[in-house]
Length: 122
Image 1: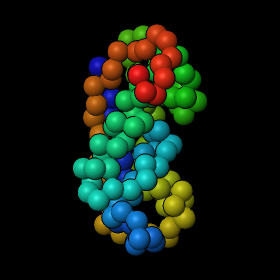
Image 2 (image 1 turned 180 degrees about the vertical axis):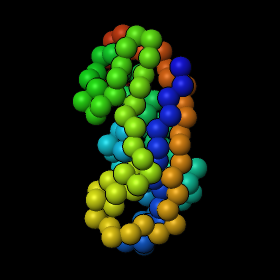
Image 3 (image 1 turned 30 degrees about the horizontal axis):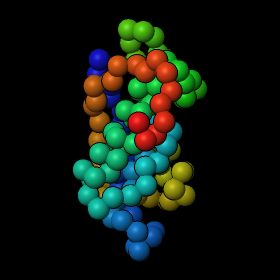
Image 4 (image 1 turned 90 degrees about the vertical axis):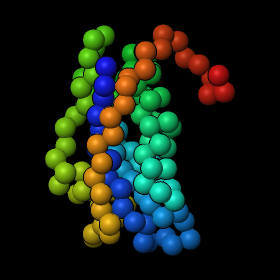
């Protein structure tokens, strides 16, 4: 089962001592820090949050609290227009505008749901 979320990626102009790109995913209501490339940022989102949340979708209610509809046979994330995604990103980062704005739809294959909690090191 595939799941698609929007990611707003933009140049990090407020903090030049940090990495080059910042991002925000409105469906997860989470910012994903920074990266040197857009691909690095997308991989961070996929590996560090999206796949984890999808793997624990039955045991945790995190996604449901964020407006997702989860059942045994389907995963439906909330829908945001591009304008809504941009406005949420600007609000989170306290920016009046975003430079080098790019909205990317990240599509992943949902992992098999976990049936018990595992340590992060497992």
